[in-house]
Amino acid sequence: MNALRRFFQIEAHGSSFRREILAGLTTFTTMSYIIVVNPAILKSAGIPAGPSMTATVLAAVCGCLMMGLYANRPFAIAPYMGENAFIAFTVCLGLGIRWQTALGAIFIAGVAFIALTILRLRQKLVESIPTSLRYSFAVGIGLFLTFVGLNQTGMVELGVAGAPVKAGALTTAPVLVAIFGFLLIGALVIRKIPGAILIGIVVTALVVFATHVAPWPKAVFGMPASVAPIFGQMDLRGALSLKALPVALTIFIMAFVDTMGTLIGLSARAGFLDENGNLPQIERPMMVDAIATVLSPLFGTTTSGAFVESATGIEAGGRTGLTAVVVAICFALSAFAAPFVSAIPAQAYGPALIIVGLFMLAPITRIDFTDYTESIPAFAVVSLMCFTYNIAVGITAGFLLYPFCKVVQGKAHEVKAGLWALAALSLLFFIFYPYK
Image 1: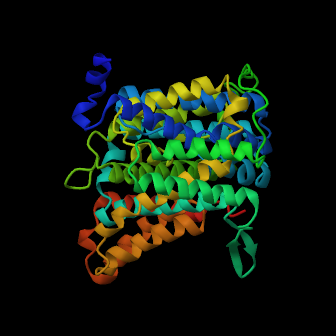
Image 2: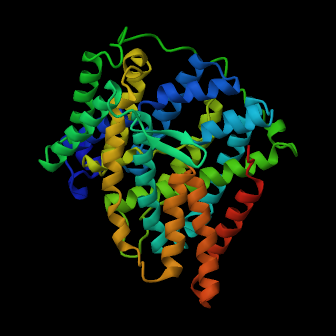
Image 3: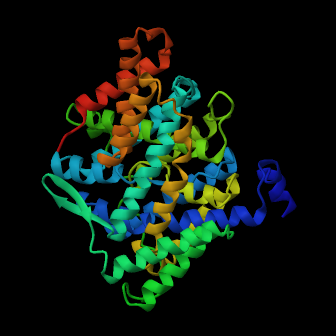
């Protein structure tokens, strides 16, 4: 126990052993849906669901262990939402590219990440991002999580042309249970009860099962499917073809900005940023992200990186890599408990995402809204993250608008060279993104 405290520097980070474990359990609970959702999405690309679930778990376990043991940060790693849908629906179904070729493109992007990290180019690019944009990432991610939670619980539904969203059926049993979960977590937070989010999720899940809104788990344990049918099946030669190169470029930029925005946004909320708004030793979590991106297609799944749901663990007090290690252990056990984990419905974890969105709004007070060259790009980041349902679109829009606004004001000299490079990448993103 003492050795773990020293290794993770728990006391130095103002945390405790109990708090880190609780944070890890909280993070895992809010992101465990990826175990089921990722295979369900990738099935549309032709990747078999059973092996895909095992690959998802393997990618998460390896990524979280590296983040915890090497980077000592409470950020959980798993296959990204968004990138998986992009691969399945746009690349494979829309463009007709084989899933093996798509995985090859992800592998190439990961190798590029490793090279850029070793050369410290990724760190330099991050350091070029102005403070207003950094804090807008946190706010945007928070509202993005809120929208995810509202939609998954049924409180908000798809609307019609001219009114794209609408209130869900608020008097139906599933939505009422989700509202109960939101009120419960809110009450626990107000009363400052330790482990409020995790308690709220567990209690709400029991209510969901007891009211038959969702069925009780049919089983608790089961053997995981073999990953052999998809392990190492990526097609590198196909990924380098002219048809697939725009896809590889888009994947590279999406993963690059997603990770950058998530790391900075989560770090801003956790208080990790220094007086200049930089994350000390950022090269470590970036290297973990790069290696995870290389390993994921090897296992047979899509891009992995820091999960925004890590914010729930941070709110629960997680400040060290022990939180990430606990998440890794939970994912490893989940491979044998998939029937139980997959039974936890959105009505139970969705309210936690909504509450966390509230927590992540705090950095908005650090944005100077009296300076429109700062506030317009920040506003674009926040609004487009939510309204396009795509974190990468919001971040790249901010990278383009910030230099534009400074040039208009006659202050182009305030834009660092690295941000010009990010603006160029962002322009390529919008040009080559397959709008399908």
